[in-house]
Length: 440
Image 1 (tube, helix red, strand yellow):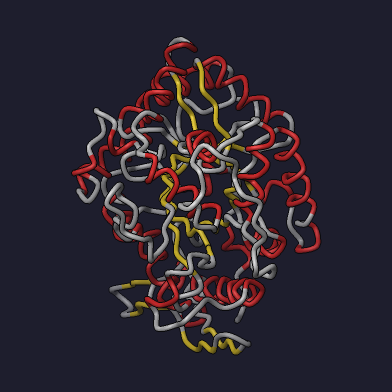
Image 2 (cartoon, one colour):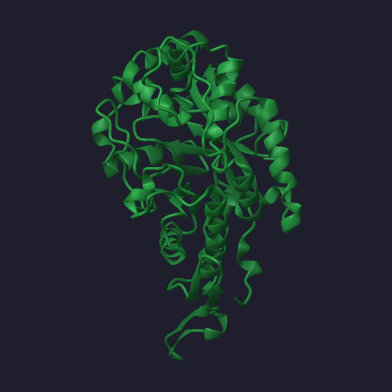
């Protein structure tokens, strides 16, 4: 393959990304705590040659009568199982820096990396859901700036721990009796504002050096953290111009950290509803919307918008409400407002129906050719290095993408027909970081 290849992640979200997917006739919500279900989905994604399986995560989601919000399994545990059920696909799990410690996170991810032979990735987030804080004995989160400051130091410490025992340190010579070469062990001696860590991890570097770092923040602090630490960025953009601006901005920050453009892959989210004809795809999307209970739709939009909309007329306009805490930006609020303006959505009902699938990300509804055209446009015009694909339903929606969209991308020569390597870094085209190991 001579052409540059786009990268694709399969974003897993219970029964599907559409808000009402659990009510769709072919979905299986009773299986979303079943390992066999996750294995089935993972193997579908691997059949489609996706680069990664991506799991979002958050604590403290409010339990609702009208949907599965708040019901989930720790993605680290899921990936430990999927490591043995897959061979090539990368395993991305979200873990917050706000309510964990570096040693715990480093140890879990390097374990997945070894079990999967170099296919683990950590999606670094700072907790934003206010309901998370009480679960850990706090009244509220740290301020936005402090959360990102802590996250930056957190990632630094995790990377030091990941490289504290070089894989070459494992001599394992039965004849001489030497198990370890201690000259290749690099104890961490870190003392910063947020963490004090001394010692080593109890596992060496992995086949890909260490897990890939993924980041999803789009605030100023989030972009700076990504430019310094991330190797893959998951973001939201609605238009080509928005995506290009974000792409230029983030790639333009890399040089000051001694990094090159290819050291970071930018992968916006995209919600895809595909069928053999455009009319069929539109009908499929419309049917999904018919399963949204109005009360649930308002609650969902309220959660994203950061404001309780239950007292407003569902067929009236979205209220203009200023957030009291201007130091804690909610990027999705601006995205929702921009969507409503651009798509001429006049009511709360119209807005929640429009975002019920993409959840603030880009949405494409159409035939395989129409979808491939739009993905290729962004990919070839410096708006994206690839996409984190959001299926409307599982497993059918994911199967549709694998069976209809992937072959069209392959026909155009912009997506692989076979995996390039065995590690996630090899498949993403990222450098192995082991050459940078230094004394801590």
